Image (tube, rainbow, N blue to C red; front, top):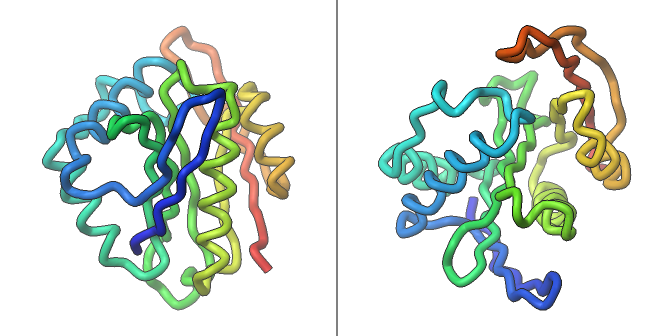
Length: 182
């Protein structure tokens, strides 16, 4: 699904929210790789993902053709600085009403309201589809993200103890959250 382009200004910086195109595959791949290195709040370590520009291009093309799934990239001067994804679990009848939502942002753009803008625009666009709910999982110690999701209307529905085991041997719980779109 293609998303209408939207211009925003954050801290005096012009940022464009739009669907990534094939021409953005390289920057999409780079930003995703960098964010995996900058934070442990994502589900994988950097060495566990091989998201090449070719893989990014294939993903962009595939999702653009789907009706209720989409990517929204945040671009500053044509350089992607973050992305939100709304992806369904499959097309089985019993699951068609819901999708997962995930976000990643370059660390230097965290804490300025970009995450809120991306999430709000994703929710706005999800409401234009037949989706009824968005769900996500978040590390229990990612307090800023949890606070944002709650402000956006997401509610905790469950918690998986020790969902993530880090390299240092410590564990993090995963909080499961849902937002009903109607």
